[in-house]
Image 1 (cartoon, rainbow over the protein chains, first blue to last red):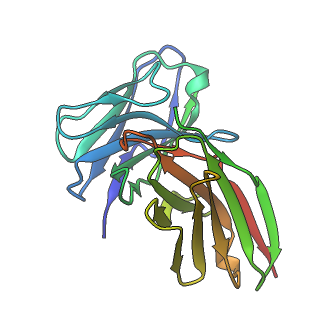
Image 2 (image 1 turned 60 degrees about the horizontal axis):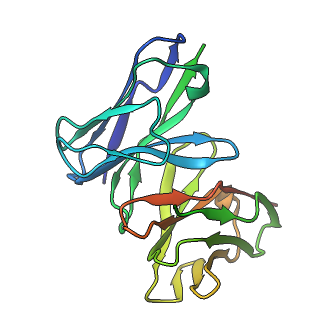
Amino acid sequence: EAAVTQSPRNKVAVTGGKVTLSCNQTNNHNNMYWYRQDTGHGLRLIHYSYGAGSTEKGDIPDGYKASRPSQENFSLILELATPSQTSVYFCASGGTGIEQYFGPGTRLTVL
Amino acid sequence: GEKVEQHESTLSVREGDSAVINCTYTDTASSYFPWYKQEAGKSLHFVIDIRSNVDRKQSQRLTVLLDKKAKRFSLHITATQPEDSAIYFCAATNSAGNKLTFGIGTRVLVRP
């Protein structure tokens, strides 16, 4: 069974603080994705990666950085968190022409 | 860029009836259209997809129809069951085939 895990599952951060969300996949997929889910917007792509060392901007990259140090790990970094980044964040692995496997999500609250 | 519009925000059906969710997309070069299901408090998982070389695909009680001319695709759920209650997301690839754009989701409620 394909597996994507995320940590932390819940996070409360202060405005201006740094937040790192981590994702690990054991699917051996080249592609990984970070999305955020907000009511009224569905899922929106923040950053994605084609493999270790690569990161690409998605549709809403402003305020976010990404890092892919290995095939298995993909991190999303908020250098200066803002309340507008309060959301549920999902990591996924897979492809655009094939099934994507989603992690359990991270609920981030920025106060 | 690609835009995907999901036309029904909520859908309430009686158990055993059919449910239909409609989506439209803007990029004529889109070639792959998956559907994902999100149960309450859980993550998303894949349910069915269709590629642009066919106009219909069925998997058990799920059928996806694709009308490339109208840039429209739809998910049909027959003989609905309580476990079909969830949010369903449609999605489409962009012309480069490297990103998925999702609709905003349709909440389906199956009433007993």
